[in-house]
Amino acid sequence: MSIGGPQALASLEEAMRDIRREEDEISRRLARSSEVIAKVKESEAELFRQLAQLRLDPSIQRELDGRISSAEVRARETLKTHGKAIEGAQKTLDGFEAGRVSLIERRANAVAVLAEKQQALDALLKEVAVRLEADPAYIEKRTAAAALAEIADQSLDKTKQAEADREEKGKPYRDDPLFIYLWDNGFGTSAYRGGNLTRYLDGLVAGLVGFAKARPNYAMLNDIPLRLREHAERQAAGAEAAEGELAAFADAAADAAGGKPLREARAKAQADVDAIDAAIVEAEDKRDAAAQSLQDLNGSDNPVLSSAAAALAAALGQEDIQTLLAEARRTRTGQDDTIVAQIDDARTRMREEEEESRDLRDRARTLAARRRELEDIQWEFKKQRFDDPRSTFREDRLVGDLLNDFLRGGISAASYWDQWRKSQNWTPGSEWGAGNSSSRQGGSPWEGGGGFNWPDNSFGGGGGSSGNRKPRAPGGFGGGWSGGGSSSGGSGGGFSRPRTGSSGTRKHGGFKTGGGF
Image (cartoon, rainbow, N blue to C red; front, side, top):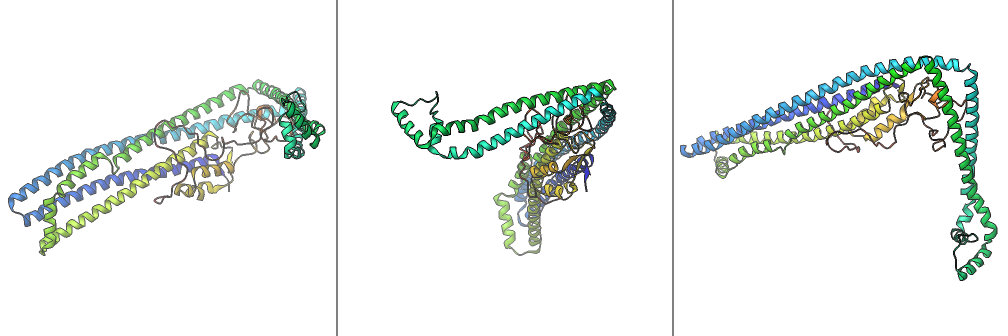
């Protein structure tokens, strides 16, 4: 079952929202984990106070209690300040996300306006096309363009055949080392520079291999394709010029029918979409930077968290306190055993919290990388106008199983994007629909040059003006006659999305992840 372009982009955006929701949830869980670890540390400190009351004399108790209390106060104040910093970073992040969502909604409205303008323009161009079919002047130009295109095609075919003959029939010459030695040195021509002895010896070799008879044949094999190619290029240039005249004639007819204001309105709508896309990139990069700042605040190597934990850990790890704990373990009293067990439980819980925090931080880094990759794909998707209502995708798994595989790291971003490219089609009736044989004006029906994009491939700049001219293969002559309908700007996953900040290196290898995806 196929899916439409707008629906496909909406599915990618929903996946993006899922990633961001999980990122936000991880940030909240990391903040809570920091609070839990701080409270467990305080609980451990209180347990050591109780143990000291049971086993130490009052003067030593007061000294130990003062040390622990001082460390607790410093840690509590540090964590309080840190908590406010996290709260502020989360608010900043939420603000950027709200702005991004607002831009996405604005873009959807702008795309709807663009589709409306395009539809009105297409309707007019179809009416003009019907009139042009009965216009003798247009028919004459189209017939001439078709004839020139046919001649250009025949010239190209002859050139390819001559080039194939050169490769096939020239192989025996190239495989003969003596012949090719004489050929490379220009023997028998004015380019030859051998001395008397060399000339004498080369003459013996030439007689041995029959060079005098073979050289003109090999020269002709090489010369004919070059001359045919020059001729084919001239014919292709003439055909291209004829198509340009035909396009100009059709565009003038469209302008006379009122097409210019419609074209300008469509161009303005397109510019609005492009401006919003640029704003989305900026908003995403700002949000990315804010997310990185929040991740740094929640990081295990954050100096604020480290200093807060270290101060209390140092107080609880001093030799006299460790001696106190060791002695309590050696004695067998009910109260001692209860407190020691509670200290062990607190330390076990702290280790579990720290391990979970490490896992969450790893997951956050993976999600950030996956989000950037999905941003790359969305950018390419919109850049190629795949969200045009006339764009469809044959493979609905792109927003199902394949999307899940990408999010889980089963396939790379490059491979996932390549699946989109291969599945994409333009619906019949758009100038890039079925039967299009030229890419002279760009890679999608929303991209135009100076003239009109004719919706039926038969008029103007759409490239199909030469009647039944067969499609040209890539590398053909005339500048824009290479084949291909929906160009994606290359294969292999090379993404072109601009990045306005140093938000980390984009990776496309795919991460093996668990969690919510």
